[in-house]
Image (cartoon, rainbow over all chains, first blue to last red):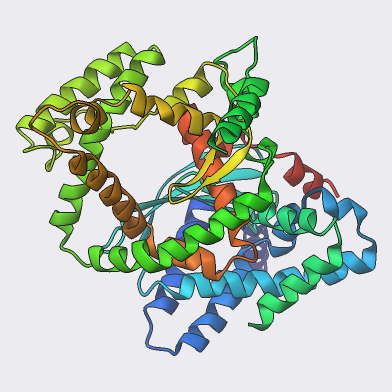
Length: 196
Length: 262
């Protein structure tokens, strides 16, 4: 009877703990960075590193959210089928672009310096990429989507104040503008990039 | 041709001047919002951009790849002395923007670094605990006075700019840059024209070397490299004008909001 009671209390407290458990955005960023660093500094081949980095990105980045943000107002004109197709193509494009960008670094040392809660949904985590003889120290801010505190997700990287999501959005906009808003041209461009 | 370009520049600039000019942060932010800057001469800009890429591949990239292999103290010495020289444009702009304290501080910085810091090679002022140096230029002063950026322009060799910043940079050659005045404009017997031009070329190489990997990476992973460079340049200008790195707090979040509320 006593053992049963103890187990019950343990289970209840565990349940309560799980419910109130949330990952702090700065801890989330540091742990993500550590995971990526250990992949990059490992002895594995570049192809394997890229595969591992893609897995980390899938877990930690809100790829679908970034994709629709990047599309800007053009997303309003897409039908469901086009949206589905775009989400698939964007994910392939994003993972290739993201992992090959990162794979160039051999052993990036990033330290989390602080955080600022912007709203219930967003926290900015400030970090520093340590300088080397070949490149200066770089300030990187991470826009973390915290709507679900148990599962924070990266939505943007702001490098020395320059937003990557915003740059990508303007890049996509430029392709659409040069092609009279034809979404198929953007689809083909994304497809071609991912094939390279 | 030059006359025609000058007329276009001045007209676009005039169109962007707000008579109710205000230095209010929000208005400044809105006026310099990258997505609001029109690419009026996109065809010509893209052609100039391609020309600059060729020039970069032939001259700047190979030189920068050698330069970046130099020992760190050499590179930081060069970087420090270029920053020190840029004080000669920053100080008048601090005054134009009404930052008299900062103008005084930067004058002190320039005097200390030029003397104790051996012609600016060592940033002694920083070791003395002076605040971080922030460059200012005539384009930023015009923006603070309420002038909008006008059209986006890609200049041969010099790269991305706006109508406002191109017109404003002419001030450097009309007496607004003391370094230009003592090297090119006036015969001071101490300096020659080559001193000015070599400092500008070195600044270009220094910039290219500092951003070597980032530029390579961006070019390789962009689906429209021209648009990426344009966006990054305009975001950077917006930040410099606001003298703020708080863009993350102020940028338009409406697109994110719309996605969240789906």
